[in-house]
Image (tube, rainbow, N blue to C red; front, side, top):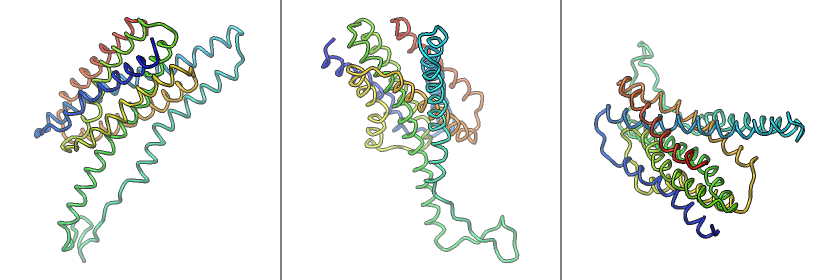
Length: 288
């Protein structure tokens, strides 16, 4: 498979993420619909979390087996294990620290003279403050969605590496199945980006940016994988992606609790996880 064919098909595998993104523009008025879509997204993200960690641990385990058989020293598996742990921490705790730094502080009004802290004196410009709070909430939702897109993008970059490596090695059938499987898989990831937005309706420009951030790395990974093979780089992207996905799952889960509909949410979470499993089985069937 030529370089141009590999890049074209790698781009196709990444572009399917745009199939699910337009659902973010739907007017979902009911809380049940919001919970259903968001928890379906959490199910997809949960599968991605398992899938990413499985690939990352396989790289470390392979290095450990080589050291056990005397083919290499202990330095490489120890280094890879440290990379896995530090990359995971960067994706989870690092995102939490970053979120805390950029989160706008809420305005706290002083209590009424002689009253408790629960009764507050609202200033004349309280209406403006309500508008600003609504804008801040919208900004947080969109920021969470873009964080999800970035985490998925890291995962897709590693998938693109697999496409490029197999194509360069002449394993055309494997590369083709990988592309088809990743294309189907990425189609579900669009829901993972827009599901947690809740009542926030993103602009078409935002959806375009989210699609590029989430799906574009598949194309970039296929470019790099065709010319360069680096398990260390692949592990790093898997580790950071796993940490980021776990962080996002926690954020979305907490946000959806206030809507109720717990049983419905867990059912849709299971459906999302199963959809991720089914689409990934196409890749497994092809030997990827």
